[in-house]
Image (cartoon, rainbow, N blue to C red):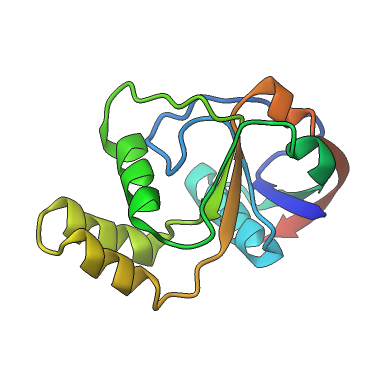
Length: 161
């Protein structure tokens, strides 16, 4: 299976990186099966870094090797998914032990709904019902070196503003 990583750099050798902000599934290397989502990530990074081009890095995912790892999979927004994302976003020092986490991307619209939930304005079930009305794309977080070994770099497609 092909998966994509949007960046302002060519990424032939993925690395585990700590982020300077909280992320849905914690620190590591993020990818998606959606080419459009990866391109959106490139454009966001280009705007943040005031550069005129970036790359969609394309990888082959060894699904057989992935099955040997400790994976957490969310096929849709669920209570468990909400709890996991909230722990990663709000609990300082929270670290999980999964090699790979797969599930929905909490994009800008989703962040707004999460903010309402976090502020106590809506409950968890209302949040999940709201999220199920969105067309959510997916993301993979590769959280360990063993997880990165399931990826083979194929190419970097340049994206311009």
